Image (cartoon, rainbow, N blue to C red; front, side, top):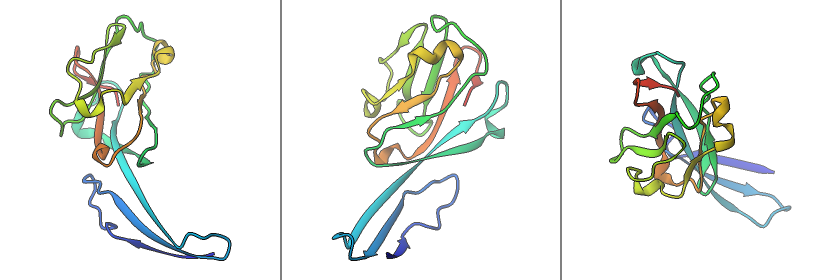
Length: 159
């Protein structure tokens, strides 16, 4: 199989994270597909340990294709009581910025950004172990951006 890739946005400046659109020409007798259009979305999240300031974080990249489900990993490193846990997943470039909020035992949907309603969740059976990873379903182009996991009670950035 011979193929050629043309990257329209290969000059992406980090942390701007542009969408990479690749046109892949397939020349083969095995497949009838001659043109395949492929979009990859890059989702960035702040990754850290307790107590570090936002300025010292280095983004962790997670790639997904449109329509995929993706997990943005985040582990607190300690066991917690889910009924006392407060976690906000958000994007600072959105208004409202919240894509998921866990407040003392359940999801708070009142302040959630409408673009994420029904598309974000955490693994409730793993919260006790400190796993506050965010599951984002049906990834869209508009999901391209920087996410962070935050505790508003003590201003700690988890991930």
